[in-house]
Length: 152
Image (tube, rainbow, N blue to C red; front, side):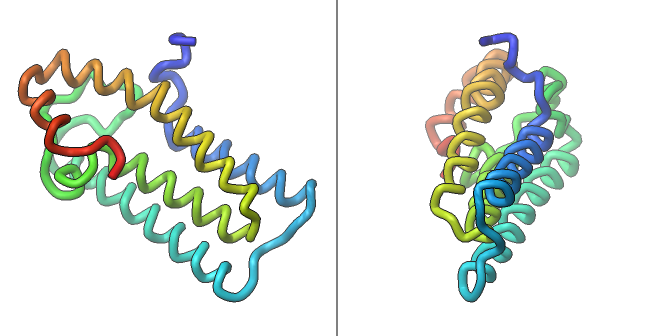
């Protein structure tokens, strides 16, 4: 299944996952959460979007490619800002966003969505990215991997 590596843009995978979560909620039964779950869901979605956006801004500010499909065009190893806490702040933001969607729908079963997205992104996006970054930035990237965790 290596043919899937770096093929589907992560925002598209995020959208499809959220769409499936909505469809499950709509057609299997359920609605929007109420009370605290509603507010927690919205808050997590905002935090997730903020993390992803901040990670993107950091890459752009460092004049390196933000494209997850063209990671081979990376010009610089970015290790500042959120990247000093997690190697994948944009993907972490997407997972948090999906956890917010699950909370918004008020069903523990909806957590399958963020889990599936995490598995997919790790296998078909992050692992190939890490191989390319190690090849391109060598010892600096290896040291970064030792210092900063993949997720959190």
